[in-house]
Image 1 (cartoon, helix red, strand yellow):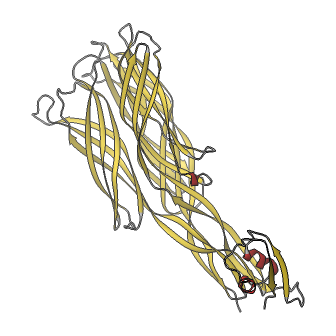
Image 2 (cartoon, rainbow, N blue to C red; image 1 turned 180 degrees about the vertical axis):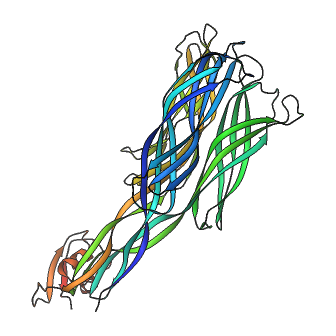
Image 3 (tube, rainbow, N blue to C red; image 1 turned 135 degrees about the vertical axis):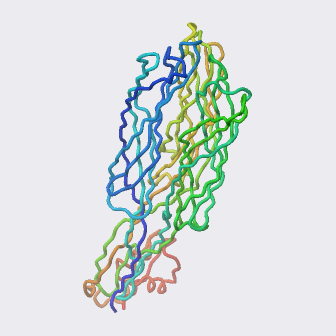
Length: 508
C-alpha cells in the first residue's frame, strides 16, 4: 500500500531582533524669560519616549523624542526650578533573523550611558551624553510538519504540540484628563511621576478594551524658594483598540507608558481651582490564542525502508500576566554631614530577566534622587540605588525565556536621621514572560523500497526489556508492529514498568 503523508502548518516562535543601539545627546536648553536665571545645575535627566515602532523589510523603524529635563537652583531667592526640551529622533535597527509572518512585537528599553550638563550662561544650558536603547522583537514563523502517516506498513509516534499563536498587537496614543484641586496654585511644577495601573483587559470581536488609571504624584512649589509640596491625583482611562482576529477565546496583556503630563487652569478660575492634569500615554496590547496540533515525531515501516526528514519546531507558551506593587529601600550616609534633606523623587530602570540555580526571576532597580541643602545654602542631589526581585514559576527555568516588563515609580518617601538618609520607593511592576521550547518533529517521509528481512525464517524472537524502555523503540529496532508486540505480551501503555521478557512476533 502506498505511503500517504499528511501535513499541516504550525506557527513557531522566532526572535527577530536583540540589539543595543546608541543615541547621542547634544542639546542646548534655553531658559525662558519668564523663569529665573540659572545659578547652579542640580540634576539633569534624559529619558527616551517612543512614539512609533514599525517592523519593515529587514529592519525596525523607531520614532520618538528624548525628554531632556534640567533641575537648577535659580539666582533669585535660590528657588528650585525646572526646564525641559524635547529632542526628536528616528532610528533604524537591523533585524537579526529572516522572513517572518504575522504580527511582530517590539520592545524598547532605554538607559543613560552618561550625561554631562553645564550652564553656559544664566539662560543657556549645554547637555552632552549618550543613551543606550535595547531593542528586542519577536515574531512568528510558519513551519510545515507531518501530522499523520498511513499505508505502507507504517508505524508512527506522535506528539501534541501546545503553543500560543499571536493574533495581533495594537498601539494607541491617548490622553486622559482629570481635575486636580490645589490649596494654592502651583508657582512651578518640578516633577510629575505617573504610575499606570491596568485594571482590566477585555476582549471582544476584533477589539480590546483596556481600563485602568494613572496614579500621579505632582511635585511643585507654590512660592519662590525650595520648599516642595506634593499633590496626588488619579486619572482614569478606558480605551478601545482594534485587534483583528481577537475574540473572547483569546488572552491578552496591556502595558501603558506615560509620555507626558500637563497641568492647565480653566480660564477665569482663581487660586488652586479649575486646574486639570492631562496625561498622554502610549498603550500597547498583545493578543494571543492557545492552539494545539498533533505531529509525528518518529516513524518506521514494517514493510519498506523509509527516509525521514526531521527538524525542530520552536513552541511558545505565554505565562499569566503579572502586576504587582513593589517597595524597595535604599539608604546610607550623606556625603555632606551638614546637609538638610528637602525632598526626593526616583527613576525606575528597565527590569531584566535573571537566571539562577534556584530558578528565574525578574530583577529591577530604582534610583532615588535625594535633594539636599548644604551648609552653604546650595542645593545638591545625591543618588541612592535600590534593587528588587520578583520570582517566576519554577517550571520555566529549563526553557528559553523572554521578558516584557515595565516599572513605574508611584511614590517616594525620604527620612533623615542625623547624617543618615533612607529613601523608600514604591513601584508598579507589570509584565509577561514567554517560554520557548524546541520540539523535534518530522517534516517529511518517503518509502525507498522493500525492507530487508534480517530475520530470515525466524517467526518469533525473545527480547529482555528493561524498565522505562519504550515499546515503539523496541518495535522499530526489530521492524515489528508495536500493536502486535503489545497483543502478544498483554501490554498496555507505551513505557515498560518493570524488567521482563518480551515475545517479538515477525512482521507480516
